[in-house]
Length: 343
Image 1 (cartoon, rainbow, N blue to C red):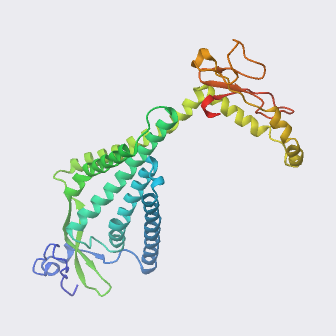
Image 2: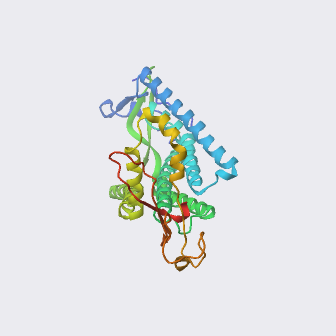
Image 3: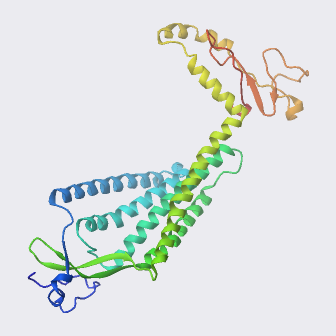
């Protein structure tokens, strides 16, 4: 193989051994790989796909950040978490996508040691922060559905939660960033289209012992994938279970489902419109607060101990009303109990 191994222009790469590795080592012990990993059409597809994803990432996440930060009324707890997701995606697009594209096109690692550590750290932190943010959103939604009257998460607490998320992401990715290093592959060279050879470098985690890498991989899998997935699935299922066992929630769902089944056909729109006024007159909802329940006077005056005709008394913060379901063939009356404060 003619030509000496070319020394990379980057000063952080390890120096070559007098530029004569390929000549001093027997040819039988040398391994040569192509400089480019893919053919020109495949490489063009990689470039187009990465550029398209990069542009979508930049434009979409930048718009999310601009809208949330520009409008004060958009700065809610959930939107702060979404803003954090957009920031983490921007970091991946800026610091990781260009280096990943070049690494997928060229054999070996073409950058220096600092880029190796920075790319791995930013990518790992962004993925971890995104996963932890999704867990925080799931927990916040769970509290709002299952415990609607408890204290809501304030904007200040949401910002503190985001800071903790990034601190945990940095903590869990620190071992990877420390061990990431660029090393030269002995007796392994790259050959370009002009038959020139270059030394091969790799960006990898150099652990003191091989078993430590397996332990760290298991920790990452459990903390970034397994535990968050189990928590999100459990949080998503709990509101469904809660709604099934809650009598008021279940009755409301049944009434909504029955109303859909008993909807009038499309051909009866005019008839339904002509009867709207009479239906509105017949469908009335009254809320009467009994002095024994709340200690406040009712809307209709002092209570006489028995509910008046057409009015249903309040029982434990709930009011029963009727005539909301459509009446017709096959549609039986279904009373519905809803919170009094929703009326």
